[in-house]
Structure formats: structure tokens, C-alpha cells
Length: 217
Image (cartoon, rainbow, N blue to C red; front, side, top):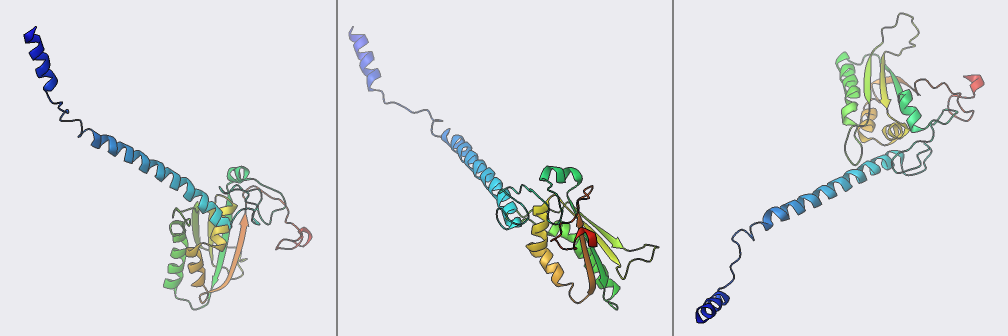
């Protein structure tokens, strides 16, 4: 009995010793927690940035373009006499923005080529305001080579494709890269023409829209 008592007493007096790896294991756990928080914040910012880009491109909710939500859902297309939603527009190919130039006589060919290259380069330089991502689907262009002699001075043509009305509106009205490009055209472009359309859609113009009444078109 004495032996058992002494053994029990000695055992009771032994100081508790922590496992040598117990504190070290906290490091990886803490790192995982921080990584998870960082991922959540990144996803929230990504969603927020996308929504802000669409709102900024159309100048807020409910503008004249028919955008009715913060993610750029389009109810209608300006200048077309029938409503078209974003899904239908995407199926038809979005919006095609056609730009035609007549350069001032005497402008050096090198400057003309540089200007054309800058226009094509807007595909990568025109960026959304918040996420800083390209939003133009495609830009192509070239010099006229028609044999019909109906150009009326127009020599260079460019086609810019947009996914929806919100992107077109932002490009035309707000995009700083596009604004800077247009400013530099002032002294070298004599005439410019712009025509937009939705591929496959042939609705009549509204009577109060630019271009006149259907009877005068």
C-alpha cells in the first residue's frame, strides 16, 4: 500500500508538459483562416467591381438606354422602333458600330496609318472603369477598295462590335481612351460618319429619333 501511495504521489507531482508541436500547429491553421478571408474579400470585390462597371457605363440606373438593373440588363435599343432584350441582342450578335473617315487632303500617309492603328488598338485600351478590363468584342478596319465609285470621299472604314447597349453607351459617352482618340482626330479628319445596327434586326426608326421619319428615310 505504501508503495502504491508513493507512486501515486510522485505521479501527481509531475508537472504537465505540453506537446512540443502543439503551438507550432497553430501557424498552418491561422494561415488557412487568413487565406479563406482573403478569398472571400476578393470574390466580393470582383462582384462589386463588375456591377459598378455596368452602372458607370450607363450613367446610373434607368437611363435613356433602358438599363434597369445594376448588372446592365437592357430592355431596349435607342433608335430602334421595337424593344429587344439583352439575350435576344446577344443571339443576334450584339451591336455593330460602323465608323467611316475621310481624311483631310495632304495628311501624311504615316499619320493616317498611325491613326488607324490607334483606332484598332482601342480593342485593348478601352477598359471598364472599375475592373479595368477590355469590353469591346472586336474591332476591324481597312481602306476602301470599292469599284462602284459611291464612296463620296470616304476612304477608311472601321467596325466595332459591342455585346450590349450598356457597353456601346459607355464607349461613346464616357470611355477616356475613346475620348482621347476622338480629340486627336480634329485636325486630320474632314468627314466622319457613324452607323450602328443590330445584325438581323430591321425594325423601323421612331419618328422622333435622329434620321427622320420612316417616310423620309
